[in-house]
Image 1 (cartoon, rainbow, N blue to C red):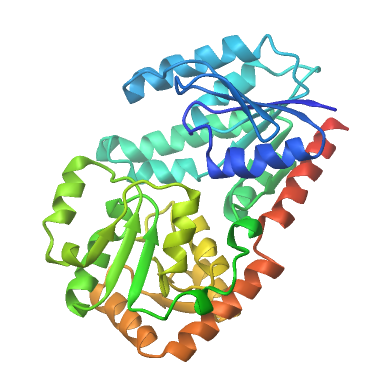
Image 2 (cartoon, rainbow, N blue to C red):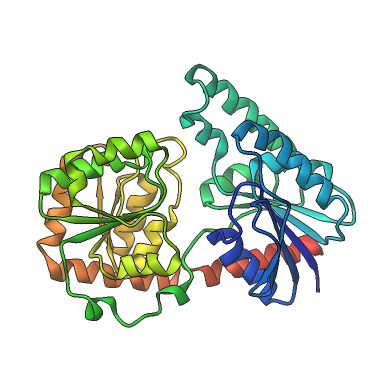
Length: 370
């Protein structure tokens, strides 16, 4: 049995990638797993994983970035860990300081952060490129000195392999057990209902999606997830297309599956920001796992997935007219929609699933421990 400490100062204790997928998989193979968070909700044990809370995080972003890593370092430097697996860019200095022969350090890169910086609204536009370059140099310097880098997409892994050969993509693919329900097309009648699961942000194309609903007039969008700000929420709710939205708020995993069960099409029309073009959004694969047809942004990587599996259509995400046309064409052909949903579901069962990714994660652990 190996002692594994998984650390995050940004994500919630039940984060899908960190807790539901990685921690549970590591624990199920006989390891002693402790997830260290800071959310002020207290300690607990859940599904074979100990959750340790370092307390309520600072209220503002700058204070969190400065003080949370120090709090995490003070705790982790005293623990008897075989592996410390940390998940946030702000914890990179902690990983660097914790290097020793007695513990192995793994950095989990969820995003291509240097490219993500280029669209961060809280960084002044004049400074974004410089911050991006400096952070990439900083991230590369530390990643090179760690035991391994786990990456959320092949694109990120390719970048890190140049720095650290022990880098691997562990994709955020669906857990099959969440979607092992009777055939959704027999449970629910085909309807003019589409869905969007995820953060309601400008860069994820929500404004253009609502404009498409205004064009269509007779399609309902079920949406769930947090708004990027109250100002953006107010802006969306003032749009004519909002009257076609059934907004469910921030929901749990069971509610997400319920939403997918009563929808015919899953929407993933993110705008072409540098960080998103080469991403692999979990919502796209969850739509496929639930047997939904997908409408996705026409990015080369996404187009290849959609076309290879014949599971949907790709559109220009900045064009409400293009989005509306794709929705109308698919909803007018129920048989085609069902066939695409079925082929997408088969692709998840055979290839894009967490069972395959969990084995890759366990293999990198074995490699590091050797």
